[in-house]
Image (cartoon, rainbow, N blue to C red; front, side, top):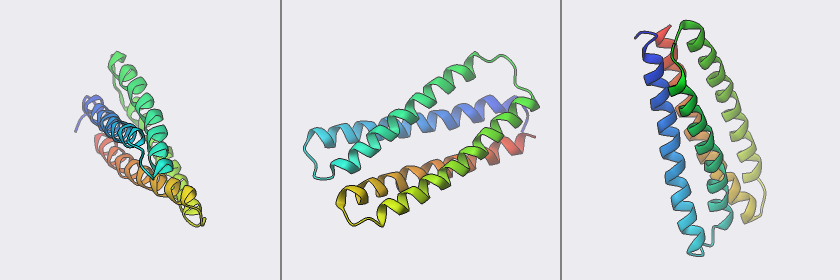
Length: 135
């Protein structure tokens, strides 16, 4: 792979995050409107994915407005994503703490956060591998 592939790899990563987020936002909004008994589950997914979608959109706009991609850029992107992997682990720990609570509210929130954290962890690891293969 070459440095020129950095834009492609990053755009695939960000588009995947955006599609994941839009899908969960759509399902969550529908379920909340239909009166699901898992209100906290769906609200957590909805809020989480609104933030993810905003990050993906802002990052895609920034990515496509960039003219050059060099090794320094790839290294900086990989560093950011490695930090995101660390955050994904923190999210999973927080989810486990919520799951240990005895109320349905915390259990629903914990399960939703764990699903989002797992997805982000896998996505971030894949992008780190992709960016590392360029260097």
